Amino acid sequence: MAGDFASATIKALVAHFNILMGVFLIHFFVHNDRESSFAVFFCANLYGGYKIMNDLNKYGFDGHFISEYQNYENERAVYPARVTAQMGKVYTLLGEAGTVNAIVMGKYIHNTKGTKDFPVVGDFVVARNIPGTDQAEIIQLLNRKTEFSRKMPISGGRKLHKGVIDGGVTEEQVLASNVDQVMILCGVDSNFNVARLERYLLLAKRAGIPALIVLTKIDLNPAYELMMEKALEISAVEQILSISAITGEGLEQLDSYLQPGATIALLGSSGAGKSTLLNALFNESVQKTNITSQHSGKGKHTTTHRQMFFHSSGCMIIDTPGIKELQLWADEDDLELIYPDIIEWEQSCKYKNCSHRSEAGCMITDKIESGELSREKYERYLKMKTELKRLSERKLAHKASMGKKSKNNVKSMKRGH
Ligand SMILES: Nc1nc2c(ncn2[C@@H]2O[C@H](COP(=O)(O)OP(=O)(O)O)[C@@H](O)[C@H]2O)c(=O)[nH]1
Ligand SMILES: [Mg+2]
Ligand SMILES: [Zn+2]
Image (cartoon, rainbow, N blue to C red):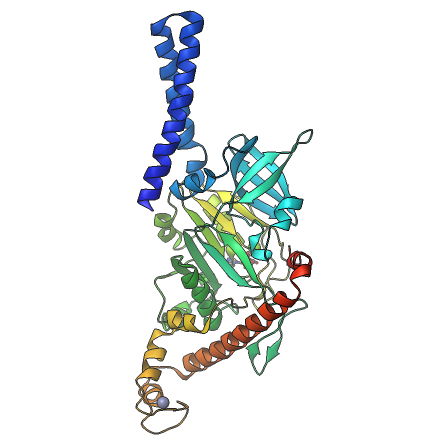
């Protein structure tokens, strides 16, 4: 990574130096004055260096993307940009010249293999202005550093088979990309749900993104510490904070996460308090909030438009509205990321082929009896295991059918975009 950055920076500087030498020579030939040519060279150098260091770098365009972009920089009239918002098929890009609306066109769509190849908020892309319009065209997605994905949601709401979520299109959907930190929000009102926290955490861990759990709305529930304890039952948990975005209590704990150049994604079901937190961090209403149903703790009105906000600290915060259902996009092996203790106990159970249900002397039964493992946590683990098993079967079937229908690929890929 550091090597990438160094070599990309050296290449950029060499290219930059050649241009500046050109400026110097032209100036020298035209004016035949060495001093003033050196002055022009020096000023141009400062300005060029300033642009390389400052423009998109402030927005996360680091060594990884500089070297990715080098494959395209010689194409006609292209520039790098970051996707800062998406509304249906229209993207907002932030490039050196400011913001511009953009779309993806024929060749890009033709080269996609699936929904996940379409740009999402957080992506860096190669863009080009469309002549005669004030719009741009996205011609290439730069390889992502991280991607937070779920399985595409089931249209028409959740479908449970014996308590396990199943069904829908077997495709990965990226919710936010190039994220350095996720904050998983959950209200301590009726929105509270440990199983849901575990699901978000699994996806963050799988993506290799550090995750912070933020319990919100503590002003609504004086007994919120009980919920904190429940959440601490999750073995993979790194840190949990509790806040109220309405009274401001605990908000200062988030300051150390708001680092210049960092990209943070706010995750959590609708009604969890993401937009309210965003508004509190910005001290103004940057995002519309939902009216929550008292009964379910779920948001009733949601916008599906994803957007990145630029905080005065220099970090970028992505709100991810409209998540009603978080279907997992993971493999059975990923259970280890969230339930390492259970997996170890199952493996060290002295019985071969044990169902770990009621056998006397079974390691899991012992752990439940001693209180080291809660029955609810074990049930959650079993449900997740079944869900991931079904998903892997569906993935195999999907792959086989895609092989058969390869000619129709593009059609089905565009679904959900
Ligand atoms: N009392 C209280 N209400 C909150 C807090 N955070 C969010 N809410 C309320 O919870 C509802 C859902 O919040 P919202 O930010 O829209 O959730 P989102 O769907 O995750 O963006 C709104 O009615 C908010 O006013 C909080 O810290 N305290
Ligand atoms: Mg919201
Ligand atoms: Zn056992």
